[in-house]
Image 1 (cartoon, rainbow, N blue to C red):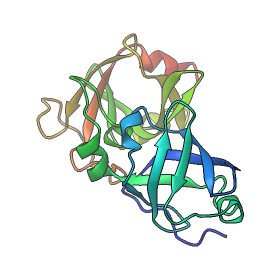
Image 2 (cartoon, helix red, strand yellow):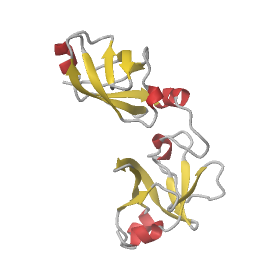
Image 3 (cartoon, rainbow, N blue to C red):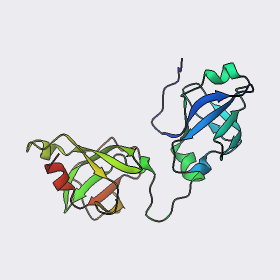
Image 4 (tube, one colour):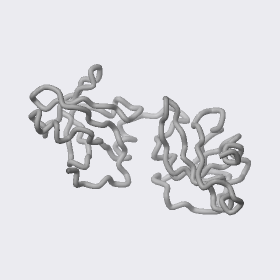
Amino acid sequence: MFGKSVQKDWVSVAKIGRSIGFKGEVFLHLLSDFPESLQSGNVYLSQFGNLTLESYQAKRSIAKFTEIDSKEAAKQIVNLVLYTTQEQCKQQCKLKENEFFWFELVGGEIVENGEILGIVSEIERFCGQDYLFVKTDFALIAQNFPKNFLIPYNARYILGVESKKDSTIHSKKEYKKSTSTDPKIICTQFCKEILENS
């Protein structure tokens, strides 16, 4: 049903829920930490095609799209994910100091005491906690460490995030999986123990 493929620089904003009413309204489930990314007049990318947000009631999570004008049409877009681009996300959503977008961290190197433990392959949220999925560095895999491990993204484990180009830590490898134009180095503690016990 959905023909368009998701592009590398797309960032998920919301998922469309069930249709309500007869004019094409739908429930929206926010997938972003930034409610301000849902604004009337914004055009969102999707596998269905572009959708323009005509109106959005944040308290009730009800949305109406310009292109959808009936209950039948609304049923066709149920479970569809709405996206914006990384560039639009940066323009509309303002971060506080030491905050990062997920797409800036994917591809980042996990470094502990000068040792590269791996690269962040994706980020997921479980029960209100963000977790970094880490693909273990090849040198550690050769020492029989697991190929992947999880790190909770919180102050106990994450000491700081640096821009790779500004970092004093010199990487042995360049990873091509980074989705960011400014790859990051994520400095950690206690994560080697997580890897050893994974």
